[in-house]
Image (tube, rainbow, N blue to C red):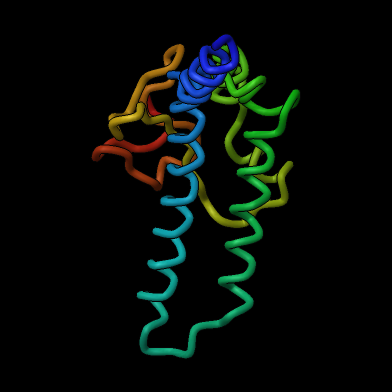
Length: 143
């Protein structure tokens, strides 16, 4: 009988608010880069799409995702979002961060709850990244 209680508790622990925020962050990044890939395809619809450009964008998306979700050095630790690291990243110069990662494309990191609503984390309301990208009609990185 004790084993059944343990299994039920494990299932409840897997879906916590923190896990939902991390999942929403990862999905947000994927959506942003898929949108970027879609716009590249749209812009080049009259031309032949350069596969190398798409591969570069996919590689940059992977670098960014790996950087912000890396255990210990990223924004996540034990499936929890670290607010102090989010604030630190938001205070970092965007161009310097982009250059440090070796990225050419613009990006925006923003946070959603389990319902897809944009959430504010420690003063970061409209994401971290390029002001060229708009989140809910407001430039990313501008509070």
